[in-house]
Image (cartoon, rainbow, N blue to C red; front, top):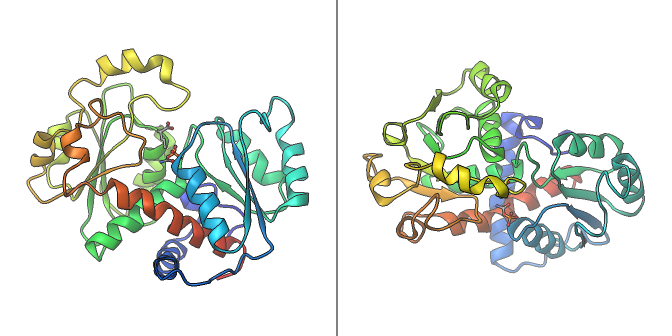
Length: 305
Ligand code: CP
Ligand code: NVA
């Protein structure tokens, strides 16, 4: 295990599978309300330069339920790279805390934070990626299907931070991954190449959502304008016309597929209400699993499980 968890590719395939096993155990313990407190006496500093519901609540609750104490540091508290240099924040927080989680705009700041922190740093989203999300997503798929064999995932929408984490996961585990996005909204070339070069599953970029979802076990989407891009929302709404996940698009998979979304969703934009609320939409179990998978990641990083 590396010191930090910044990218899914920081883990080997074996480490990923082992984290899924641990998450299953810690989830069962949580459900039984077992008094399992391996992080007693530990503190977690949580830096948030962007808004969050799931990430904040799942880390804070998770760390607390494992016996530790988590501190929320919002945009007005730290001012990453503005009020203070990233490397100074890293050293100061390492003096007080056992672990740092951060949600930042610039990925280079995440790398710098991890480089200078003497305690483990966990990436809670940057403009480039969102590794905890996609670890929880794949865990949820495994929980539903029982196995990850012969799996095709089609992501419909913007080639954003979520997609970069999916591509990095495709660099470690064998599954087919297709992204259907408008021209000009493809993921980073280098990250695509990383997934392709791993040679594990088929990696495809399409501009035709209907063709792309054919045979998909999972259809996944996310907002068209991410945090930090909201001023582009109107232009993106025009460019992404035809990329909404509707019940018709789900039917075009030709099988009983699951719908997934990292949330928050803009209902009626990238996904219809009908799809969000369908029995085969697993967006809420997916959100719930964030906490269990993150707990497993934190326990591993701290050498507690
Ligand atoms: N999916 C996710 O990270 O949600 P938040 O932005 O609410 O944390
Ligand atoms: N792509 C979205 C994900 C939110 C969890 C964003 O960055 O805003």
